[in-house]
Amino acid sequence: MTCTTRFCESSDVGSEFKVEDYRLKIRKGFDMAKIISIHSFRGGTGKSNITANVAVQIARQGYRVGVVDTDINSPGIHVLFRMDEEDIDHALNDYLWGRCEIEDAAYDVSAKVGKGEIILMAGGVYLISSSMRIGEITRILRDGYDVGLLNQGFQTLIDRLALDYLFIDTHPGVNEETLLSITLSDLLIVILRTDQQDFQGTAVTVDVANKLNVPHLCLVVNKAISIYDPVQLKKTVEQTYDAPVAAIIPLSEDVAALQSAAIFSLRYPDHPITREIQKIATFIEAEI
Image (cartoon, rainbow, N blue to C red; front, top):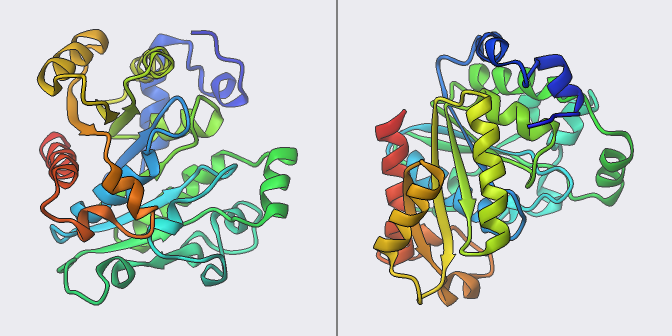
């Protein structure tokens, strides 16, 4: 893989013998929490929806969970946690521009996702959203930002919020932020659909993860259409990418009907989709 971003140049991603040294260097300080990046090569895979649902299921086991929306160009995961723009005084963008500390942008959304029920036990969910303001998105697109600040911010969040897990909802494709998130991860979860473009893009993502020596990698097939036998599909995908498939999530009108208005696995705890989400949570706990 030829890499032309500043991150790659500074991290020597293309140099096999230096990758692990670099990974250990930037991972210093992260030992107390597990970092999971959830990524897809293309948009529209349901990545944010899966991130939110899995994070909540992990929190239900009593863990303190952080969720960071690093899809700064097109943020949206806050909607699933019933957060409106006016609810967010500080976003990830404010931290990146030096306007606040990273923990000031973290919101405890445990009560919002629980709708008043005691469902999170001793755990909690803390959301760090990116800004929906047009001016903020435009500035990111025009000026970029210091990706290294994300590394520092993740360390600070883990320390000051005493997190057990940090979920990173990445920007689709491969860019500097994506490479940093993948390199930091204990586990990379790649979301794909039963689509030829997704199949090819996933191959690129898996290749990048292997070059970056990510300790654990798994795949989740989302929006699988009914013509595919789930058992055979799982076997085929695992053989194609030489990586485990944590779940096969079928295409569902029930998910579409909810319109991202709530956390699906909480609204419908006995639904087949929820069972697949729980498989991903179980895989995470068992794997890392």
